[in-house]
Figure 1 (spheres, helix red, strand yellow):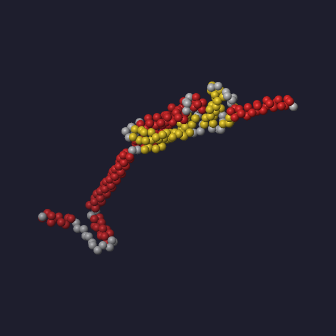
Figure 2: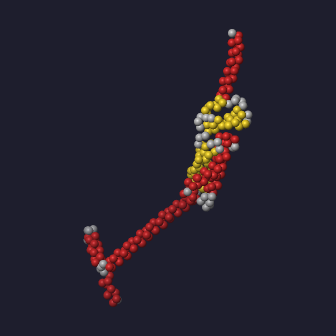
Figure 3: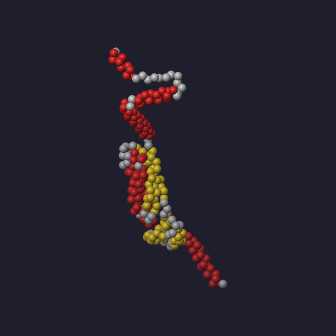
Amino acid sequence: MQRTLDLLKWVIPVGILAAALLPSAVRILREYERAVVFRLGKLLRAKGPGIVLLIPFVDRMVRMDLRVVTIDVPKQEVMTRDNVPVTVDAVVYFRVVDPVAAVVKVENYLKATSLIAQTTLRSVLGQAELDDLLARRDKINQTLQEIVDRHTDPWGIKVTAVEVRDVVLPEGMKRSMAKQAESERERRAKVINAEGEFQAAEKLVQAASMMREQPIAVQLRFLQTMREIASEHNTTTFLPVPIDLFSPFQKKG
């Protein structure tokens, strides 16, 4: 009986100590998580997913998420290549592909990636013209993605996309662009009208040539015109008189 009591004196404290240390010794990681383990400050390796065993007070674990992360790039004041001030913002999609590098080679990979995206956004858009920014945004997005991915690759970061989300123009520039678009539409309308007049004139010349070769066509056209006037229930009838009839009187005058 005494031996049992003595044994319990040792078992109970050990059990309590084990229960207290178990949460820090056993970690469970999800499928999209990895654990970068340091033992006495020295890097071991990345572990997981599943159960990860640690030595209490000796090992330290840094949990890393491998899912795609989205960060907003704050609005940036940019002067384009053709000296137009614009305000732009963007969104960056990236994920950690090397958890060891993301922990060891950079202090805060989220902040570092965001700052790289901001500086790259100002640099790239400063070399682009306003028309390219508005009409060729896909090309600009691809250039941004390639540059940001090249800078963050040593940190174990893979940038999958960079999208320019909004472009804010000054009010004066908006009015100028609206006037330009309106003038362009007016120019196109005038060109189309002139082309229609030119084609109509060509057709009239062709018709006149045919009537000159076939005089009977003039008489048929006259009768058709009279028929159209009569069908409109008009009380007044117009009779065209050939101008050639007045030629003798003009010569005498």
